Length: 461
Ligand code: SAM
Ligand code: SF4
Image (cartoon, rainbow, N blue to C red):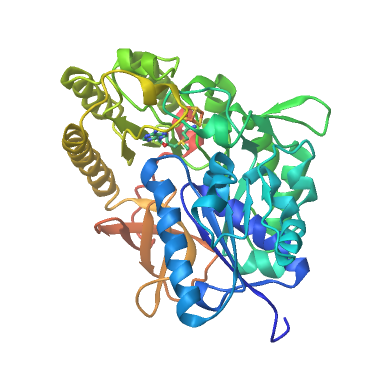
């Protein structure tokens, strides 16, 4: 790295796919000499990697652009400013009109063109690229160096599938991320091998509908997500696999069986239901009922009894009555979540639900959100308490809060604080859960009497 290398600051909003994309943008700019910085103040290029899923998320971008404009005035510095991600895709050139501080706008399907667009911006043009590329973006994006991979830690994301053809009536994803497409399996195996060779121990496969994955296999056949995970499981040195986010309609028998058969596949599943009311589920175009969802959970738990279930809920969808909301509370209770994300319905321009009758007042949404959050928090705490005194594997992924402490993740994705002399980041250690905190577990290295959680092989016995 040269002393005067240009500095890049990427600020990501929203989902994990944006975290992955932020790294890809940094990789694309590394051959141009850019090095990453953690502060906008000393950056030569600021990229806001935006989210359009809810109004609040989208509006954050404009407040941040206001702060950048002020910072430029106060410091006299003139970093280039790029808006990327789903707001860029949805609003395109509008952003240039609304925010003169912006030098370029780039949608998620065009990141391979970032260096080219920056050159145009340097010439004083203000390029906008929101095309849905016909070329293979991932194939053209520069690969990260082993050093860059190692600097990002022992867990990594790999996007395997992008876009969505489901068109839930509340959601912007089919418009901002385009039609569903899956990356070829050979590309994903090679990418995962590269990550593992550089020290990554856990890989989370990402997709807007990751369980709809249907990529071309090295054998010329179409591979499912389960088939892909079977291949990835064989990579020596990879300790853990996860995938997110799944749609209930795409959870097939083969994927359910993978939870029983693949020891590296963690017993955690993020499977959003959104609502417990069949009337609302139909209006959302989810194409499944509450009962179908619960029966699906039963089948998955039969394959993997210790599965920690997570999900997403939307409260206050147009037309949602008190009775519909009671159905949502009921399904949350019945499904027994280990965690879940809860959102107030946010009308998104261009989506069918935004124009539906029966928009729910904000105060009602607030009250429902609070009640649902209270239930989910209680479930999360109960799940954490159920682990106290039991043995779990912990992947150590960073130094802990205090000297001698390390932090990691349980198989169920909970943060774990552990005092384990001699242990190192990247190691998976067996530990006894000793206590629970607000959002994490406390554990000590295992030894003595054991009460091991059911493992896949025991689960089927
Ligand atoms: N594909 C996943 C599925 O089908 O469940 C979800 C992907 S979406 C990026 C993440 C979550 O954002 C959704 O599950 C939903 O709960 C929430 N969401 C999407 N649109 C929303 C809206 N207009 N208002 C509130 N929440 C929304
Ligand atoms: Fe959005 Fe998920 Fe529905 Fe696709 S399936 S439209 S990403 S909520």
